[in-house]
Figure 1 (cartoon, rainbow, N blue to C red):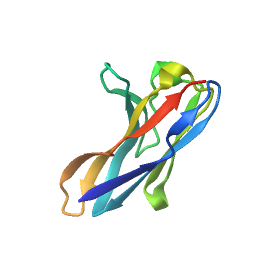
Figure 2: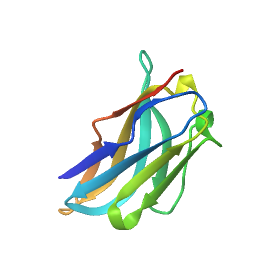
Figure 3: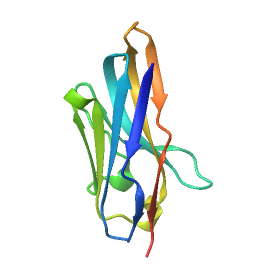
Figure 4: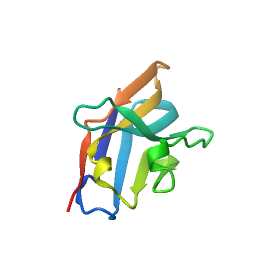
Length: 120
């Protein structure tokens, strides 16, 4: 199976920055895309940003110009650099993996979530 380990959440003041990391490990044959979703209280989970195997990087309109997603293929790790954070960015951020296991099964895996709180 594939496991995701997230890190980097926390409390930050408005206008501040945080960097989230998500490392995938286990029996990985290939990665189609990795990304970050978030869910605020009382709201549905939404895509924040993703990065595909061909380098496409879709972003939510609300984070364009402020957030940047990147990856380290050698480490199967994806990063989300979040700048100019706003209180409305407060949410639990979930890492997402879409790919294939070593036995060629199509997998969608979620991380456990990391809380980002933007508040003064």
